[in-house]
Length: 284
Length: 136
Image (cartoon, helix red, strand yellow):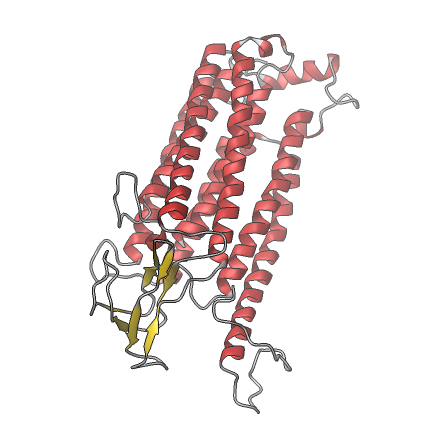
């Protein structure tokens, strides 16, 4: 299809109706319209999960602070809040841009252009998945977070530590209400630190760090995992359509490179969902 | 598709991605600034940073759907059938967040039962079970 579609489409519907009624509802092809409705239903699925996250977060007196939880960076960097997820966001945004370019090249039937930009998109998707694997591995392997145990807690009162953890906390360090902590695990044993509460109802009492809200781990792994699963399926379909473009399959098709447009819609949707996952898990 | 020339749609795509990248950087810097990471002793209320980031995320969503997914160039009927149903989520968000707040009130009432005779309690009467520490 050339870029001048108004006349083109008119001609198209007269000679070769793509829907049985002979005219295209909403001037869109069947495949594209159905992709939109699939994405609408998928948006509701993600919304259900994210709203459940909101309800559970609102129901807890404290919630792990994201810039404390997500503050590691490959190469043994610590205390770099949100740096790594910002990088992940940029990778996904960049792959959305390369996808737009692939669709544009498809419109002017430039086969090698489509293949080139789709390959960049695939690389972006794969890089995003790699980053997510690293992030999960750090959380599970080094920080021992799981769907059942959340070692990230936050203090509800100010106090003074009675022992150190050998990393950042020394005996005698003080903290305020709202400060976050990570309970360490060595040799299969959890080591919550003892502290003295300095205000609140327990002022003066000796207490111990408590685990954070359990729902955090389950929600984090489930929702980012479900998003990662979408990225993975996206990468697989991108690969298939990229190979099909390369072999010239779409050259002979009446609707040209429409498959590239349809996978493009899906790919942008994955980016769209990430905007909200990024907002709820990392920014707020 | 197709209402724009190849060159002008290329320019729009480049502009859009630059705006998206700029908003993302702004969001992250604003989040860190508000929480006191960038300037010592400087904080911004969570309501302001939070509200700002929700608004900016909606702007990002608009740009992705309207420019990248070409919703801007579809006929109004398609736009309506896809976007209007999502308005139902507005109520879902309000209702479930209110429900979450109510659960929080119930938890606190179970931990520290209000003195008898206070009618302001939001916990259902006759709640007898005890929630263990960190039960969720």
